[in-house]
Length: 281
Image 1 (cartoon, rainbow, N blue to C red):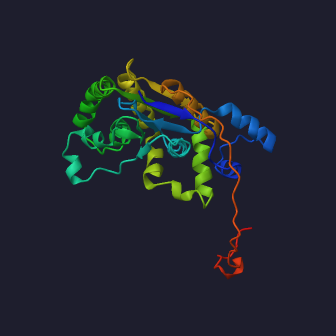
Image 2 (image 1 turned 135 degrees about the horizontal axis):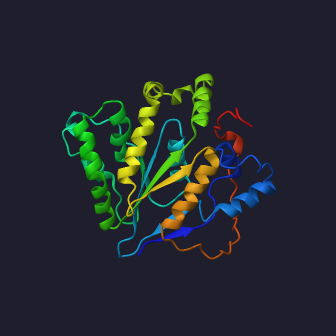
Image 3 (image 1 turned 45 degrees about the vertical axis):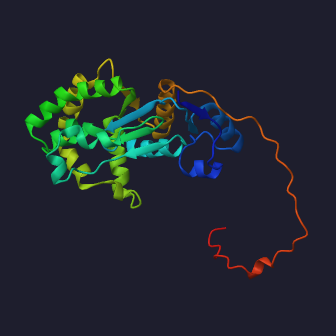
């Protein structure tokens, strides 16, 4: 059976601060240390391989723009050393449009000991494709009928399939839209499709409710994440995910660091080496 090792953080404190991982109240090194200690076994997830097959994990993340779930996908993939891939498939090409709808997702499914995070995943068909008219009504209805059975098939095959929906209020979504519109460094996050989606707000709400009515099954339920606060949502998702994935604490025993044995070798003067300019000090 595959096991997951839970250890200490490999990121520096400064990197965690810049990434927005700490909450605002953790404003001193002591508070950050206490906060960090409370959060994990969440930071490093290592796979230890055995001859027997390990667990396979696939997590599907979905939301209405701009809920911030894409950053949460990337953050989780960075916070783990478990073999993790992010599958964010582009729009299908001409050949893929003629395939069975789920066909192009199948090659990205995990093998033993792997974790795959699907950014939106096959649920594009129930959301943006359906609302924006990128699929026919027949294709949409076929998806709604086939999806629950497809997911049950994945679970029967041994894959741990977890689905998260990031829920944000209309007021918070509007605030994020305005923030991206008026902040030049964030404006790139808004695509033409994001702007067009504002004309179909009620249609997206209806599509989400219809999707939940059909695909929120007992075998593969949807887990709703309160994403009003991105940082707290990120931590809550990671902690919840680790309650579903079986793991054991395999933190290695403390090591004794041997002393450095220095010889009488004299190294060349350091100023003879070509150092890059120190622009940031």
